[in-house]
Length: 573
Image 1: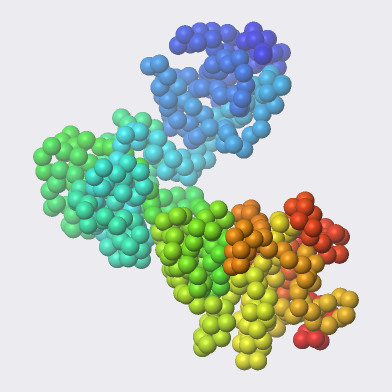
Image 2: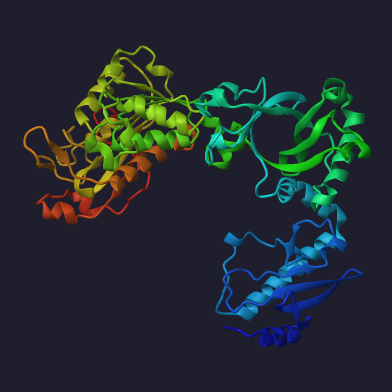
């Protein structure tokens, strides 16, 4: 713990002008600096423990505003400027050296204020770049939240629907505006709410593109002036707005505004409410009839939502078939869809059973339902732009399909070497050139494997079956960690109740390496047939008397993607 007197004395030795004082009944360090010709006072409220980058507050901020990265906060009735010098999560603070941490923070605060005060062009650019966050600062915690499905930036209208009565969480708790003609329209209706017909209309929204954007007001008092300036600009640049909507008379207007900023197109909302019906106000006198509130607008479209969640928009048109919706396959299905793959066909002949609960992504609500269909329903409910579809077929049933070539990739997660090789044989005989990933895990948590067989590249599925002792094609994969011809199943209830022992972590890890291969390939970052394995520990297998392969003992390449090609493969050579 460092005392306030120690901080004051230390900063004085570093040539800072500072004093100890009481501000709003708190022990405070006040530092005075001259920036340009202006005196700036910064206050640090003393804290015995430093757990984050120390914060210096700008005193009497209204005389300097608007400033980029400075927000007005009222503390015990006194206005202070909170200065954002860094994302709190991106800074590691040496709490063992509090004096150095305080000095470093002070230097950062002064540097940012200097740039804002002395470089007006940079200050304005930053205010526009962070327009949306500054706008939301004006939104009261209990203000309305509006979810807008919108991709078209042009002038248009929309109905605003009220939240579903009694809903506190989820999409049903938002006001909702769905813009007519939006590419997201059908998806919004299908996925947002099964009770959409029970919503009532709250009013009309107008989507308005702004040619020019002024920085957001730094407090609510400036909201009216900001609005009138925007209207004046629209009168000269978009007279069609008032020709089309100027005669509307209503008690509520929802203005969904959009404009280009240095960080891209930003969307924001302003709500106007009056006791009587009036037309859209264009003057200070007309504005007196209205109450203005900033609305927390949540834009809901692919360009906004998918990249923010780490998905790749370029994968949307890829067609992928996943065979097997078990513990591994279900994880793969969810992860491929989360990566941005919309067109996923899921094949599995089995129903979801109690035995699957503890290592599957589906919940108990899907018990006795076909796995493939349950997975497609779950994915579409969770990821609104997904077109995942479930089918009851087996891998060998796909041999009857005439359009296998239409798939960009087939992922096989059934753990059946015989069926996988028969399917490969079908592809070779019929000259069907479609990339295939085969993935499987081994019992007792010893590991899992994935291979990708890319036509016209070196390496194929058969390379993974070359026996390195006889140099011929064997019955088991040369990637395996457990020696063949051993009983690796457990039995709790007699014939028909055998199972392979592995946990949900093993399923997830195996799904990760398979999905990684898939995404790399679909993003054209992987061009050659490849293999990858992960290695777990041997304890459980040892307890059950299971012998391991030579590969397991000497394997040190976990998660490393390596060439699949084997020079002794009878197909590749």
